Length: 231
Image (cartoon, rainbow, N blue to C red; front, side, top):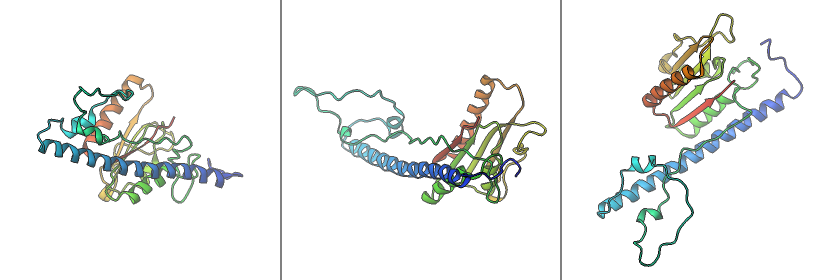
């Protein structure tokens, strides 16, 4: 389109952007598998302790409990031995990857758009879906512009929910992302748009964002979340 005139180095930049985001997606998949494995070992250890009559908190409480890191301490000979669970590493928190050069959410499979020559977000989500057959991805877009390229790519997918918060007014780019746009086919109701007018305060946006994302997370129970923070 008119805002994406080719320039010297466009291929190199596009390859760098896509490569960085794909690397982050692959690391997330690997870290998620390691987390799930650790969680399984943790729960198995808890079950063995319960069978032996040792009281311990339910798995969900153990996983949600946040403890401040502290240096290891020695146990004097007269002190009771530490819990057998100390031999099993607790499940780690959800892995996180940040790609500062990514987020080119307007590009389509057949054309560049909105100063985006490659849609690295779509590539990252496809990589997650390919590497984790049971993955359910929640894509959150809080850029001032609607993430039309990502929404279009997964409009018929039931494994990806796109949730976009964006400004909407007559003539504002890209002119998509209305509340009536809900996806098609098996992806119907998996495309959620929250168009906002001018003058939305930080407090109002925060309230809308928290309520919408919480509701979608409860309904979808995503295994992975991809967030385009935008501008």
